[in-house]
Length: 135
Ligand SMILES: [Cu+2]
Image (tube, rainbow, N blue to C red):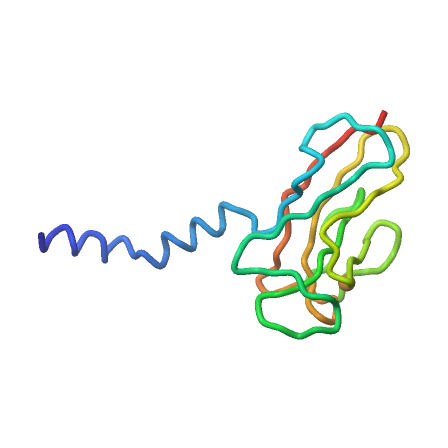
């Protein structure tokens, strides 16, 4: 019994759970699927894993934030508030889905959570980039 317990302690349950968190993005795009071929307007559904939850902009609560959808752009400077323009869409009312008008062709989408003043969390919470094709 004792050697087994030592092995488990040696592995460090803390680092195991950190690995699990790192491997699973806390934010994710539910729809459309990565690689999907879709028609405009495109409905995009946002997902967020526990312990994180959605709160409107202006509401300062731990482990909460609002979604930003990045359209055809890489992650912005994560030390600054998320830009506010046509490629950095804010969902400050706490929305968890939207409908986008997109031109035909390939587009990338990525979610980035921001806090009550639109700053990315530390460490940041963002989804994988998905690529879709609009017919
Ligand atoms: Cu924002």
